[in-house]
Amino acid sequence: RGAAIATVLPLVGLMPRLLQELRSWRDDADVLFQSSRLLHALSTRCHFWPENVREPTLAAMRALSQMQHDETLEGSSDEVRACSKKVLQAVEKLPTSPPAGCLSMMD
Picture 1: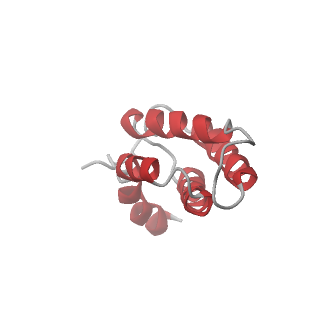
Picture 2: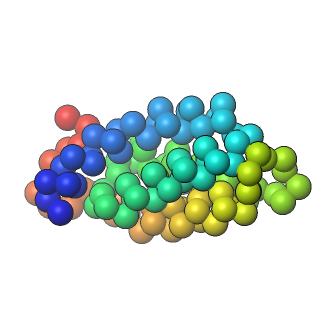
Picture 3: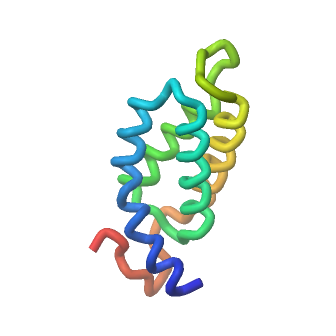
């Protein structure tokens, strides 16, 4: 796990950019679903996300998980909602401060 985690950490730093891009794809359920899957994978493998990554991700996942059935999306909005709820739960479980001995992932 150690080397894999170290490799994944820089990707967490890309979350603000990913969330920004997702705004332009908000009508495409497939893109939202795959992006949510990526966020879920990162949130379950990394032990800490800084607040400037964590808070925007939580806000975006809350919005996706509460999408209404009547919103028009290409693809299945049910899958997007379900996956974004998983991301939300995983990110909420992340500690708000880095574990002892953890290198800063933003260096």
